[in-house]
Amino acid sequence: MKTQRNQRRIVAAALCAALTLGLAGGAYAQQSNGTTGGTTTDDTSAGNDNGGGMPQIQHKGDVAFVSGGVGQDESKALQHAQSQWPLSLRFTGPGSDFLADVHVRVVDAHDGEVLSATSRGPYMLVKLRPGRYTVHAQYKDRDQSKAVTIPAKGSAKADFYWTTQ
Image 1 (spheres, rainbow, N blue to C red):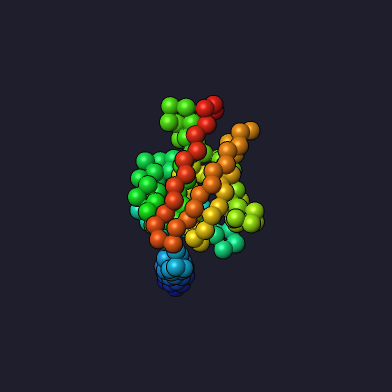
Image 2: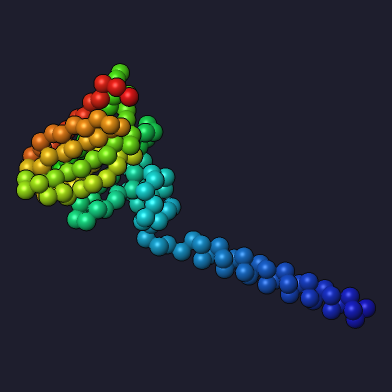
């Protein structure tokens, strides 16, 4: 009898400890780190700080940018956000096919590089200071360059189109 009672107490204590650890682990996992559903280094679109289907904002030096638009939600979110970013870029191919993996280099009026990044989709939005820039876009082995002027208020757009994929 005494052995059975001790065994029940041990099982009850082990069960209580397991439940306590499980609840504590769940509470720890739910603690907010300032990011909704991901980390600030996560550059995918799912569950990030930007919300509404926007891809994660990335930084290269002083320049912030976001790229993507492969899925419909992400594409619509980027199109909607264009007016809030100083520079909007779009990359398309034959038949208006959206392109990804376009290497983008932005240089200032003094030929100083301000951004070098690869677009994760057909849209790239870039926060630049007002001024004159040249955007170099390379898709596969084909390069294009376009001059853009970022106004003090408003935004600039540049569309890049490649005839072959």
